[in-house]
Image 1 (cartoon, rainbow, N blue to C red):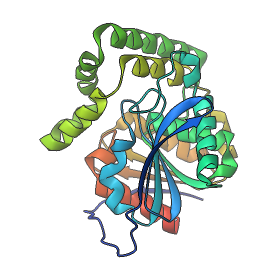
Image 2: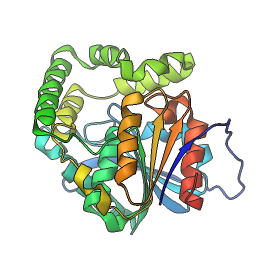
Image 3: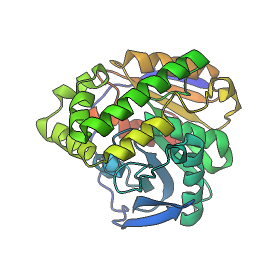
Length: 295
């Protein structure tokens, strides 16, 4: 069953007496690499995967909306407080997906709901393809199944390598200045100054080596294309895009046509990072999907 929806409305966090204030931050070794992981609350597991230049901190503004879940958020390879291996091959998205399976094993979680944004969405989809028995429901925000042709992948690898070298040569601050000016993020210029400052601080905390190798190892030019295998996914999938992010809305619409059990939500007025621009709306869409199967 497939369903396409345009979501409208103002949303505010609900107070709940049942919310657990359990907070746990820890480092854990996964397949030889040290990961930083955070857990909040109790309930059905919800694994949160951030995008490029993000971290587990990305999701903290959404915690009040997700009080019924056991939130599991990791800094992905080369990001935040997680180790940044020197070998770019260690960042390959298939290996990162195996790391997620190892993380769930360590936490005693057999099956989790998974939310991924942009790069984290590509990782979430790869995890669902390689470990489908570990995913209960899947949410992909502004993400893609990869590039379809060899020519597209080759061009993207070349572009990512050029950007990786630029990061290494000019440093993280110069890269973040460049990154924030990309058309992909122009809608964030209208956000409150405090929000923009928090996002910038998060981006600046990374190392040049970690970001550069993340591009080389986990970029769309390197990862497999999952387009022809989308029909294999039998778990419910929610595709979320921002109305003003036309490229990723087109990608989501095409994915929606191929996935056997998907919902497609376009959020009015939002750009690429819906969870940053409209956190209440995004969190509510996800909650409705996780608890009711509908949005």
